[in-house]
Amino acid sequence: MDTTAKPVYDSANNRVSAISELKELGNYRYLLGQLIRRDILTRYKRSILGVAWTMLNPLGTMLILTFVFSNFFRSEVQHYPVYILSGLLVWNFFSQGTNAAISGLVWGGNLLKRIYIPGTVFGVSAIGTALFNLVISLVPLVIVMLIGGAPFYWSMLFLPISILLLTAFTLGFGLFISSLAVFFPDVAEMYQVLLTAWMYLTPIIYPETLISANWLPYYKLNPMYWMVKMFRLPIFEGRIPTLQEFLPALLWAIIMLVAGWAYFTSKSEEYAYRV
Image 1 (cartoon, rainbow, N blue to C red):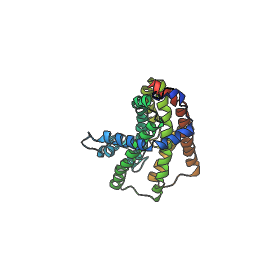
Image 2 (image 1 turned 90 degrees about the vertical axis):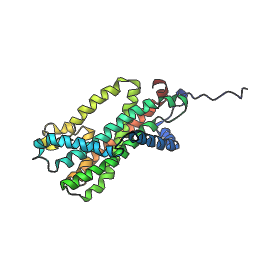
Image 3 (image 1 turned 45 degrees about the vertical axis):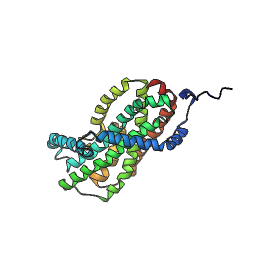
Image 4 (image 1 turned 60 degrees about the horizontal axis):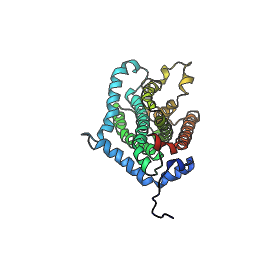
């Protein structure tokens, strides 16, 4: 018997279920933390403004959009800068997180070919980094509210739940779209076009009151409609979402997370050969 033979990792023989992948992710929590730390440091270490850029980026976009659209929606939306910035923070988190999930899995291809790492670690780290950026981005929102004289409501204590639902949905969708991008490289490019269209089909820039009653049911089929609403209601309207508003967001978050996680893990043994 040859005792000198070296063990060879073969990902094709390492099939994992969605549940075991979750357990493995816990075992690799140190690596997960290091990936998030690396992404944050890489993003800011060469930037003159550093972390401040995370706050200035949505603030600058808000100023431009407010200047362009405030004349159209001034009578429709009071405190329009708060309205638009609250929507932009949600959208930036979603778009940055899902895009980072795609690039993270591709970047991690060399590691997947050499050693066993749960593929979900790259998607979770991407969302973790986006979550850090979202929390930092709340600072300019508070500043805009103070300058504009917008009221602060007790309902804003609901925001952690809103962020939790948004994070679950984004993680599930990020895992799903990154898995597709591995097998179909054009998906990454097509996704940018989809994101642009998706943003304008979500009431971020314009008020929901402008949507025709005939079209509103179709808008409500858009999961990001509910994610933005969960975030915006406690801030802008000063109330906690009703059960009829909360349930669609909760269902979208759960379904997307479970479906995205299950689909991603069902293909995990193939990633090392595809990226």
